Length: 208
Image (cartoon, one colour):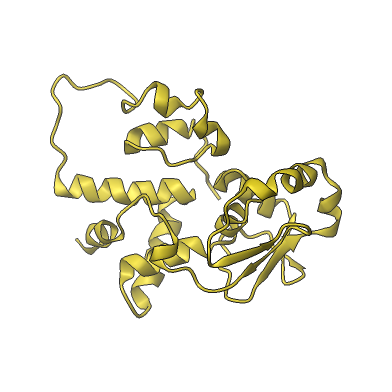
């Protein structure tokens, strides 16, 4: 499937805030957003007022950029959120959080969602004892996420094991730091996630 291949720091600058797309680099002086917070490209002489439609588009794009999803897949996920009972914007956030690549990132196995996606695609992650190399797979309550046995001998695994104590794990997940095995305790709620976008604006964008 196609994937955004340009410098991801441009996406943060375009969104107007840090989306933490480069992991730990975003906390260093090398962060492009801290050095150049203006949007990429030629700057207009006069500052334009953003329309309501433009603000809704920006919120939708921030959600896409944050989770590394292209438009077609994001629209399909939004349709699934619409079909579920409850508030569509909150349903969308919960579906995004339940993606396997996001859970791997939340457990501290990777510094960014892009890195977590790569771990999943290369077959290093297992769910309930079975290999799963599909980043978009949705986890459910009770699922156990761990590492393939052969992957535990890699140098990267040793790095993760050495730094895992410093990672903050959300309340809806648990982690056995000694064996690097995570468990989904419950379905995430909007209160469990510090979203950098407004779900209601995304609903309004697709409702037109």
